[in-house]
Amino acid sequence: MSRLLEVDDLRVRYGKVHALHGVSLRVERGTIVTVIGPNGAGKTTLLGAVMGLLASSGTIRYDGADIGALPVESRVAAGLCLVPERRELFGELTVEDNLRLGAFQRVRRGERGAANELGEVYARFPRLKERRAQLAATLSGGERQMLALGRALMAKPRLLMLDEPSLGLAPRIVRDILRIIAELRETGVSILLVEQNARAALGIADRGYVLETGEVVLSGSAAELAGNPRVAESYLGLAGDRDQGTGDRAQKNPKPETRGQERVK
Image 1 (tube, rainbow, N blue to C red):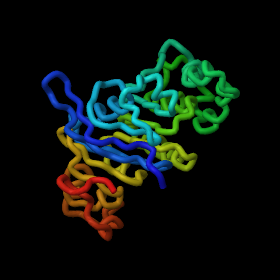
Image 2 (cartoon, rainbow, N blue to C red):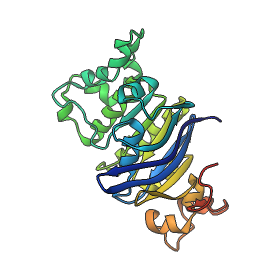
Image 3 (cartoon, helix red, strand yellow):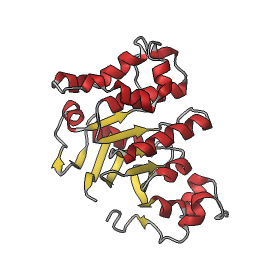
Image 4 (tube, rainbow, N blue to C red):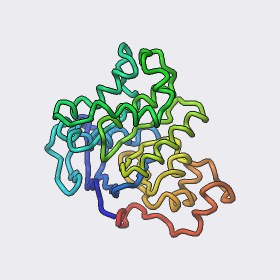
């Protein structure tokens, strides 16, 4: 399995404030990698830097090439796509118009069939087909998240970055969204998932990183992190209880890499 994204020693500052301190991570092709951590840890900043929305230092390699100097538009054209926490939909446009905008760059490049892939998105999100003539501003929270994901898929991303896709959604809708994210992996899309719902994120991810105050403090397979006592107590609400969920099956795995060790192999 080859690496699609390699981030090394990534640093971001907001004026005199250091938001990221030498963050390194890897995303293999066709896998889901999750980044968990508390509010203010730098998770959204990490995605913004990889997408080129924020100035940063360090190395960002995508598909073997250094993309650190590329503008956002070029990164999108190369197959990177970010679904931000606020979804950034065009509320005054219909669902279908929002979806078509997702394929805008592909249409501009003259790709055949780029505007005719609505059927695939509607097949994955039947609710959007039902609401296709409805204004985006009138959708429920779950429907808006589906629309944001659908619009991203219209761009045919190779690396899909998701910022808190479960935020503010009912548990049933969260399960649906995460199921869809897991299914996308089966289509070959690589996913970098930032999520505060650590239990849910580790449940679908292949690998994970714990980010605290701008630094990676733990990393390993999703099972390893789910079985780590520190992660369980701080993020899974499983202190002293290892007999439920992923924690039980993860106990058999070695401890994840910690700060000061080689974080990624």
